[in-house]
Length: 155
Image (tube, rainbow, N blue to C red; front, side, top):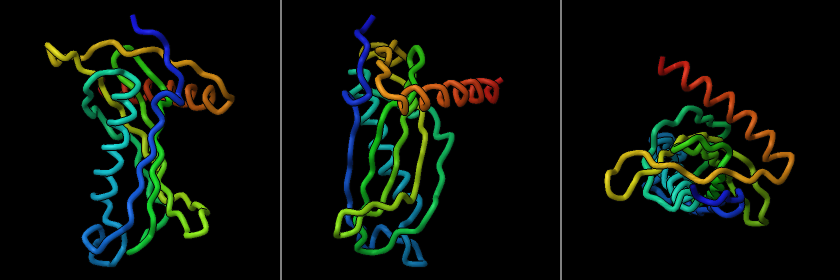
């Protein structure tokens, strides 16, 4: 089995400046574009944690809290919150960042990524997670509950 990893080992940040092609008909950030960026950030986090190629298994929470507009700076931060045997839950927070550096969260998403064996392309075990801060433990507990809910939905 792989050695446990810290959350900081796989944390990922991605930044975009909103351009006209990123906007919907109302001049706001197109939700589908943001979902694409979130999926990429989650994939990088999961690849860094697992050391494997990954696939998105689910997006079970995606909450739009505020709008973003043309020329806004969008900053996304991804981190592992929970791991199972072959899966990893990744939280991606999206912020609008002002020119002065202040951030306002506009979205939070939780995705489940599955590590893939390079030869069989089937799910493969992932490293466990070293929890170091109170926030890590709290997110792990919440992730445990989300995992149980997902499992119950699958039947």
